[in-house]
Length: 502
Image (tube, rainbow, N blue to C red; front, side, top):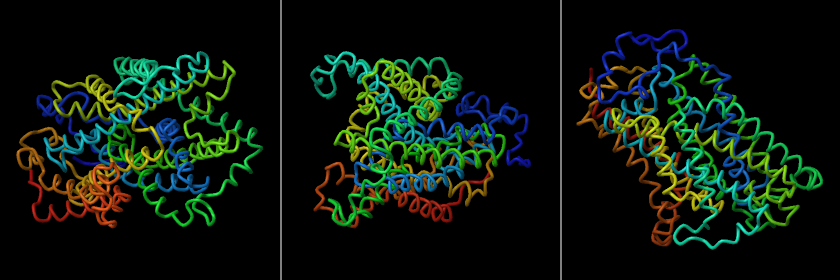
C-alpha cells in the first residue's frame, strides 16, 4: 500500500471486498476511499471554529477568573494549553488522513482487535459526559430564560436524588429529545447546524462583549482587575499551585478530540489540509472566545458586585423579550451543533466498534444520549472548581496515556505504516493475545496509576493526610505524566515483546 504526494494511502481496489464479511467491519467503520476525502484546510478551520465557539469554552475562561487569575493569565493559560494539545491532535490525525480509518479502527494497531474497545469505550464515556453537559447547558438556557418571563417556574422544590426541580428536568429532557431527533436524522443534518452555529455564537459573544464594555465603563476597569495571586491579594504567592492543574484541565478540554480526531481527518484531502486547518482553527478561536468569557465575567464583578461565570445567568439579567428569545435560540442552536459534532460522532463509532454487525452509527448515538442523561451532568458543572479539578483533570488522567500509546505505536514502532486490511481481520497481525495487546493495556494502567492517589484525595475518598504530598500533587499533571509514562512503557514493552508479523 503506497502513499501519494498528498500523504494518502492508495487503497487497493480489493481491500474492502476482502474485509466486508468480517465481523470487525461495517459501513460506518470502513476506510474512506480517496474519492470521498474532500475536506480542505478551510473545512478543518471552520470545524474547529464551530466547535470552539461554545458555552463550555466561555465557562473555561471565566472559571479561571473565578479561581483568581486576571484576564491575560486566563487567556494565556488557555492558548498555551491548546497549542500543547494541538501536537497530539495533528499526530493522531495523520493515520486517519493517510488510511481513511476512524479512531476505534486506528486503536486496533496498538491495542489489538478486541483490546481497541478499551480506549474506545473510555473515550466514549467521556464523550457521554460531555454530551450530557452540553445538553444540560441547552436545557438550562431554556429554563432560565423562561423563568424571566414566568418567575414562578423557578420556585419548584428540588427532586430527590436529582437535586434539580421538575421544570429544570423537563427543559433538559426536551433539549435532549431535540438532540436525539438530530441523531435520528443522520450526521448530514450537522452540516447545516455547523454552518449557522459559529456566526450565531460569535455574534452573541461579541454583543455580550460590547455590553460589558459599555456597562463597565470601557475595558479599562475590566482589564485592570488584579490577579488574586499578586502581593496583598487573598491568594498571594499561590499562582503556580493553581496554574499547573489549571493548564492540565485546559489540555483535558480537547484531550478527547486529540484522540478521536481520525474520525474527522479520514475525510481530509491531504496531510497539509488537516495540519494547517487545525493550526488555524483551534488555538486562535479558543483564545478569542476565552477573552470574551474573561472580559464579560470580569465585567460582572464590576457591574453586579459578584462574579457570574455562566453566560446564561448573565443573559437573564436582560429584560428585553426580543433579546432573551434571540439569545435562547442562538444558545440552543449553537449548543446543539457543537454537541452532535464533538460528542456524538466519536462515541457512536466507538460503541459501533463493540459489535460492528449489530450497532450502527445511529444506535451508537442513541446509546451516547442515554448514558449522558444517567451521568447527571448538572452535577459535573455545579461549580468552577469541580468543573476543572474533578471533571477535566480526572478524565485527562486516562486520555493522556491512551494518546502516548497510540503515538508511540504509530510513529515509533510502525513508522506510519499500517496494513489496513489486517485491521479488520480477527486472525491478522493485530490479533496479539486473543485480540488483546497486553503491552498496551499494561502501559495504559501504569500511565494512569500515578494520578490515582491524587484523584482519590480530590473526590474525598482518601484523607489528604494519608497520602504523601508529592504523590497527591502528581494528579495536577495527570495528562502530561500519563502521556509520558505510557509512551515510555509501551516502547519498552514493544522491545521486549515485538508485535506479531504479517
